[in-house]
Amino acid sequence: MKEIPNISQTTAMGSNNSQIGLQYNHEEHYHQGLSVADATAMALEIFRQYFPQLQKEAQESLRVMLDEELTKRAPKQINPPSARIAVPTLQGASVSDEEDVRKLYAKLLASSMDVATSSQIHPAFPKIIDQMSAFDAKLMKKIVEISNSIPVANVQFTFDNMYLTSVIPHYYSPYFDDLNDPWATSLSIENLARLQLINLFDGTVETYDYDKFKTEPFVLEQFEFAKKHNPTRNLTIKVSEYVIQLNDFGRRFIELCITD
Image 1 (cartoon, rainbow, N blue to C red):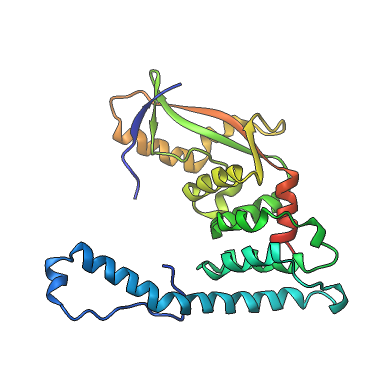
Image 2: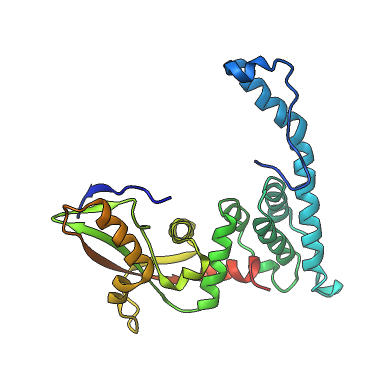
């Protein structure tokens, strides 16, 4: 559902195999609400009863993925894992409920045990994965596929000296349209830049016409929505040019944690 635009001044845990539940004998509490003490007790009891099982399932999932990664390597190519990488990797994987994120941990651990790549592992990589979503991983794969500087825009719907907010993502690029979620894409762009896996900066890709952003179907759809809810305002589309580029840190992360 689209939000009505605002104005800004310018310029469980849970796996597929586990069912979480807790028997509670006082059914009338569900109708009357729960006291703070009862609600807290129920939450903690769920954690005590089910977290060990969920953690076990996550670790088993990682074991299967790690086996798959290591079978791609000859036995003589495999070294014992480094505790500095293995411990935080296993900790992170044991509490992750996203399969695509566990795959990142498995690839990282396998790369750390490969004689050809173990020296290239940065100790920050496990913590970086901790702060990534499955969508972040999907966007990184897409950036690798494009393998070039990517034009991105901050599109604003302006009137007078103001612009609308909440009606279009902060960052948009048609290069990511096939991910089917421009809002999640914008969030991931900001997160990957925060993690220093990509460079996001003011500038242009010389071979790209940034005026094309104004005619992209998604931008026009959002613009029509904005005009509908702001009939008294003379809205125009403003495009600020940005570029995404992979940096050396992000490229190494991709080589060791994402691509085969």
